[in-house]
Image (cartoon, rainbow, N blue to C red; front, side, top):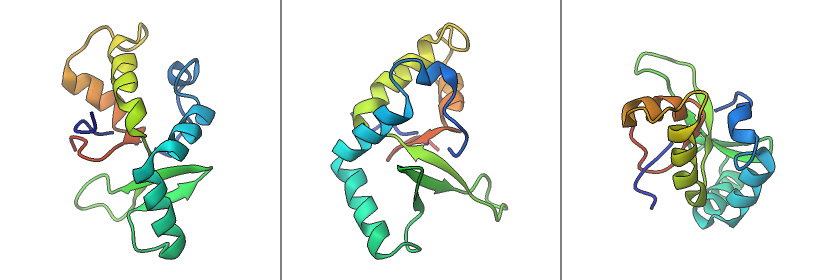
Length: 120
């Protein structure tokens, strides 16, 4: 289900790299995602026309932290195949999860990942 949405330039935290959310897995899943591949193709044709960049072999969404900010940060465009597993992993993470609310889970994710129709 891609109606839930979340992506960053910082290294992926250890809690996500320990199994499912390592860089190689993200690259493989991005390569399989037709929406992501379409954006990468568009970026190759018009690199400065979209709010995305391709960095470290990963598509990233450029976000402005606040309406008054001139700086942008980038977060990983999470492939649709990884959204539910990420939400589950963050919600149930023994170090930082603990079955917290939707808002707390979202706040953990939003600085690292993005996907279409993600709550912003």
